[in-house]
Image (cartoon, rainbow, N blue to C red; front, side, top):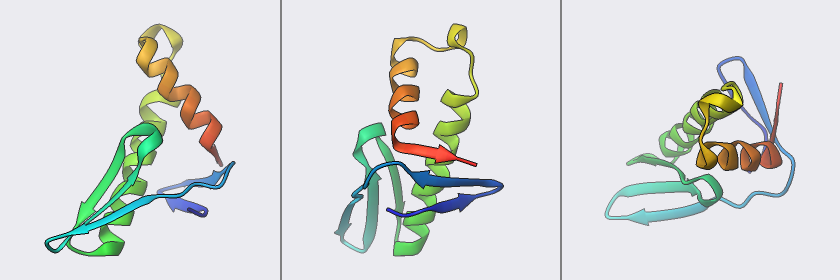
Length: 88
């Protein structure tokens, strides 16, 4: 997985990230297992875009929240996201 842009954010992987890609009965399923992020579509590129938009959603939910707003799972997800991406 290389750099990608969602809205005004540019995501750059800090490490080499291999996406899991499955195709079953006309449906593309592209996932980032580390954070349970998944994109699905009958079109490969739409599925990938959906995954990237979900990663952006996770960034917004976990990186922009205060510690008080996050439980232990949320803090763990934030830590994983920080290890995977830099965002500018």
